[in-house]
Image 1 (spheres, rainbow, N blue to C red):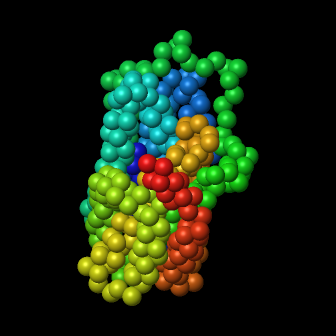
Image 2 (cartoon, rainbow, N blue to C red):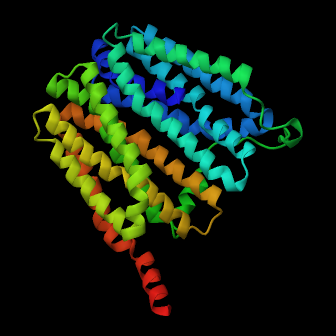
Image 3 (cartoon, helix red, strand yellow):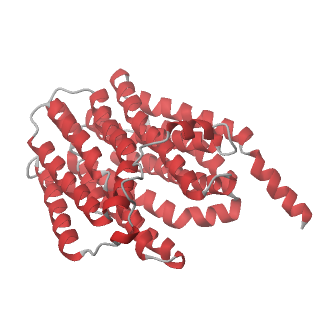
Length: 384
């Protein structure tokens, strides 16, 4: 929760920081992308290291790295220092996610593992929801205050981990030094595109590309177009986070059981395109909350539905499949903010209009490439 709290806390602040340094929309996007790029590269490495040295040490490295990078961002007085601190944050704080998930796997049996992962996901979601609101409020003290608050919270997490958390991986179960620690397997990612889950992996990339095309530059957009201050941007992001959390936790299950994964994915793709377009003409805070909420609700239906369908269709082991899917989602989070930032520099509406075109194209492609499951379901119904 603290890790995502630190990530969310700075979202309402970064546009004003970048503007202070004379930065552009592209430079704003670069700050978001470099974080995701470092996570893409280093998360598998930290996960492998936790198999070798234990979970607790890696968790403490992640929390301490988050504390250091947040403090450095608060002290930055030039863009390159802010960018370097953001890079460091992605490198070190990425230790938290794989080590924490491995810790939960160590201490739960198969019956209770989903519940443990659900609590873990809820903690991440809570941090992401609370972060922008706290950042917006603290920014009224000073613009740097949210960074130092996040740093202090991470230091508390280091202390609690050190004193209260037991090690979940005993020495006799750890991997030896003969086992190589690997980063992302690009070859396997490429080969998977030609298999039965290829189009679903493309969708995993596209919906994260679209979401971060929105999230990565939204604060900058709101500040430039509406002259919103950090507390107002924080309020919008909290609302969006709540909508995403409720959609994924409450609505997706009933929708997919009632209509099926394919129908939900297709509808969500077209609705996401409509949501992008609907944000461009609005002029009031209420209208912006309504239209951005509709977009986030639509897009939030995609991730669990695409993941579930990928899990059903894959010929590969489930762990390998989810690792590949997460890698494609990471690529979307890397490229989305860069695209959105560059489009914002050209025209304030271009990030949303270009995102709508991407979702629309994916929707029409889904009408063709997602037919397989419908045929399988029809055959099963006929055989019954």
